[in-house]
Length: 324
Length: 256
Ligand SMILES: Cc1cc2nc3c(=O)[nH]c(=O)nc-3n(C[C@H](O)[C@H](O)[C@H](O)COP(=O)(O)OP(=O)(O)OC[C@H]3O[C@@H](n4cnc5c(N)ncnc54)[C@H](O)[C@@H]3O)c2cc1C
Ligand SMILES: Nc1ncnc2c1ncn2[C@@H]1O[C@H](COP(=O)(O)O)[C@@H](O)[C@H]1O
Image 1 (tube, each protein chain N blue to C red):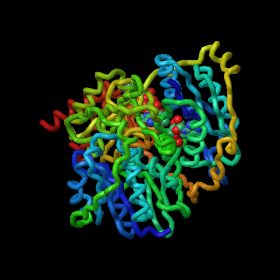
Image 2: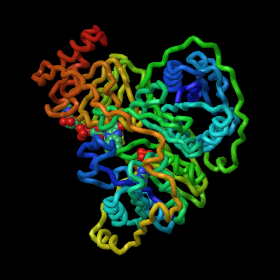
Image 3: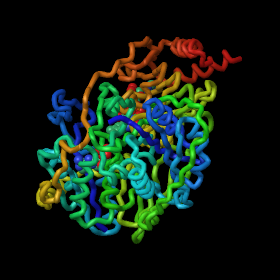
Image 4: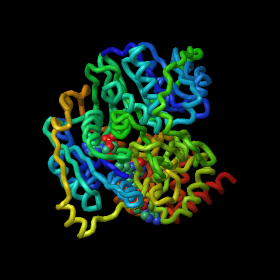
C-alpha cells in the first residue's frame, strides 16, 4: 500500500500545535504523497501557519466552540471518521499524547481498522511499516499493515526531530460534521497546570532525574539547585511520582515522558527498563547510585557508585566555585 | 451501581518476557500474574460499589490459565467473573481484543467499565478507548481520582502538563492510572469464597463474534531484532573524588 496521502492529527494547546505534531509532519514529508493536518479546537485556524511551515498543505479544522469544552475523544473520532470516508487518507499519524491516544483508539474502532501503538520508526516502501521496541528497548519489532486502510499509527513523542519544511500556511478546510448530543455529557471542568519554572523537561539540554534513592521528597531541592546551575530540568522515576513526592508531569519512562537531552543525570534511580525506555536516547548518561550492580550503570557513560546526597552538594559547590 | 472491570493476566513484570521466535507471540510459560495495573482497576470498582451499592463483574480475555487472575479479582471482592478463552483469539490485536471485551460487557449490567490505562505486557494503551467507541459511550481516561454522584462521574485526569477535572454522564468507560488507590490484598475468607462465585465462560459464538481473531488483524510482524546496546562507560567508586570527576565531565561536555 503506497502512501498517497498522510494525515497528522495535531493536538492544539493554547492555539499552538504541540511539538510532537510538528515532529510527525516532518516525518510525513519524507514518506512522499500529500501531507495534511487535522485539528479540533476553537483556535485551530491559528495553527495553520505553523502546521503549513512543517509540511501540511491543508488543515482540516474543527472550530466549533464546544471542542474547547468537551472531552475530545468521542467528537473528534466521529468527525475524523466522516472526513476519512470523504478524503481517503492512507495513513493517519497520532502522537501518543493523552489526547492522541483517546482519539486514535476510538477512530480505529469506528473505521474498523487496526492501530499500531508506541511507534518509534516509520517507513512506507510499498507497505507502511512501523518500528517499536519491547522489553525495555532490548528488542526492536517491525510490524507492517496489510490491506486495510487507513493505517493508524501512534508515535511516541521525540521519535523524530521537528524540522521546518519552509512551507506557507496550510489552507484551512472547515470540518462541518456537527457534534452529536451524546458527546455533550462528557466535559472539561477545569485545567490545573503543574508546570514548573525553567526549561521544559522534553526540551531541556540537561535533565537531572531523581528516584527513590534520594531518600525523601525534600532532597529534590538539591536536584532543582543543580538544574538551575546548568540550565536543566528535573525529572523523576515513577516510584517517587507514585509516592507523591513530585507531580506526574515530571515522570520519565514508558508511562511518562520520553526525553532526549544532551546529558541525562540519573540520581538514585535503579534503571528499571520501564524507566530507561524514556531516557535511553540521551546523548550522554551519568548515573549516581549506591549499588554497584544497579542496572542503570549498564547505560551510563559515567557511573558513580556512591551516596547521592553526599556527592551532589559537593558537585553544586564546585560548579559554583568554577563559575566564580 | 454496577461496575465491569477489564482485567488481564500478564507475565510477571519482575521477570522479563520473551517472544516465541517462530510465532511472534508472547511466551506464557513463566510466572503469570493479574496485571498490577488492573489491581488498581479492581480496587476502584470495589470502592465504587461499596459506596453506591451494586456489584463488580470482572471480564478477561486470555488463555485458560487466565482463570487465576479472575479468581484473584474474585478473592479481592468482585462478585462474578467472565473469562473468554478460545484458540481463535490467540494473537489478537488491540481492536479484536476490544471487540471481544465489548461484546462480553454488553451482556452485563453496567454503569461504569473500568480498565487500566495500559497493560503491563502489551502497553498499546488503546483498548479502553476502543471499548468506549464500540459501546458508543464516553471514555474518561488516565483518571487519578474518581467520584460518582447521581448519574455523573467526576474524575481528575492526568495530562502532559498537569491535571484536568472532567465530568461525564454515566455510563462511561474509565481508565485508571497506577497509584489511584491502594489495592487490597485478598483475605483468606475472600480466597475461600471466590471458589463459590459465579464464573461465566462464553465462547466467541456465544458473544455473536464471527470473524475476529488473530488471523483478521490486518497487521503482521515482519522482524524482531536485538536493539543495539550502548557502549560501556566508565564506572568509578566514590572515594571523595567523585564530585570533581562529575564536574570535570560536565565541563568537558560544555554544560558548565
Ligand atoms: C507498566 C509499568 C510502567 C512503568 N512506567 C514507568 C515509568 O514511566 N517511569 C519509571 O521511572 N518507572 C516506571 N515503572 C516502574 C519501574 O518498573 C520501577 O519500579 C521504577 O522505575 C523504580 O524507580 P526508582 O529507580 O526510583 O526506585 P528503585 O528501583 O527503588 O531504585 C532506587 C535506587 O536508588 C539507589 N539508592 C538508594 N539510596 C541511595 C543513595 N543514598 N545514593 C544513591 N543511590 C541510592 C538504590 O541502590 C536503587 O538502585 C513502570 C512499571 C510498570 C509495571
Ligand atoms: N485481554 C484482555 N482482557 C481483559 N482486559 C484487557 C485485555 N487487554 C486489555 N485489557 C484492558 O485494557 C487495558 C489497556 O490495555 P492495552 O490497550 O492492551 O494496553 C488493560 O490494562 C486492561 O484493563
